[in-house]
Length: 251
Ligand code: ADP
Ligand code: MG
Image: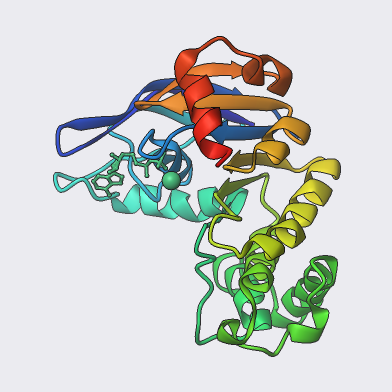
């Protein structure tokens, strides 16, 4: 589903992603763990060109993602058109939800399908209602994000991601901004999606999710994937930095 070759990203002469190679299969749930500053968010953001890679290749669903840039490092117009395709194949859920504050829950969910995919409004609304029912928020469709809890906002963000009918959903620490008692309501939905066969790449500090739900865990440090394998392999490691990381995260 996703193929990454020699992907690098340099910010102000600092190499943040260092020649990453990674394949993600259809239906796979991959958790990415690792210390702050390791490049986890940058890797996800490169996958849907929220950041433009400095070099390397990305394919999604066997189609190469083009990211030609101009001299200022901005995407060129040609790539901009492909961006529409890419952003509907690869949806993203952010730590801070990133809902549109001036749109209702329903408007947030139909915005992408209506404007990007030109789905007729009625059809988009019917689909949105199904998705909002799935995340348990049908009664909130006319609310504004500010009137929802963090857990509810993140569930709307997941419904919004699903509304694009993506091939892959990227989650960047989706529960890190939530009060502890609300974490489970978001994780429950992610577990459900995983069970339905959704391809998911999840940056997370929820070690129970990484251990119990993912097919594969990647440990990132200094812009590289230094450990990759089944959860039981990665968590039973003799790597001292991995063990330090796990100790730190447990308090
Ligand atoms: P993680 O998600 O693993 O905490 P990030 O991908 O956010 O790590 O960041 C990796 C490194 O890249 C950090 O050193 C960070 O300061 C730097 N970085 C991230 N985004 C930018 C940016 N837009 N401009 C400059 N440096 C950045
Ligand atoms: Mg991050």
